[in-house]
Length: 168
Image (tube, rainbow, N blue to C red; front, side, top):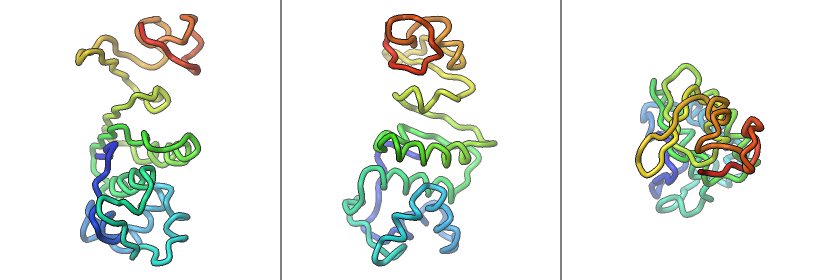
């Protein structure tokens, strides 16, 4: 699971990633971090993988903490993946870098994605639209946009959903 808020222990970066698979080698940890778009960040750290992240990861940005959680998911390589606002702390540029990694991670496994950003779920096979705790629509992105229901482009004209969305 990659959650919106990632808990990190006051330990090394390597130890925090290794929580996903305690028997992982240092090379496997480094590869997971690379796939989560953190290789450059780790290379700049004075102690690399041995750098302590502080209690709850206070030495890191929110986006870096989330990418560590993504690295854990790569390292775990479980058959099912849950992404709960997994890119919510990332700026647009960072999200694009991580999106490729997440696409690779989601391939050939069951994935449940919880997100507010339509861009995060746009390629999903099935999108469930929730309102007040109930499913009010379901379908592919294109089908939901075409039906003009809860998800529709601002102004109400179908445009493929590339712009700002409004709710009915």
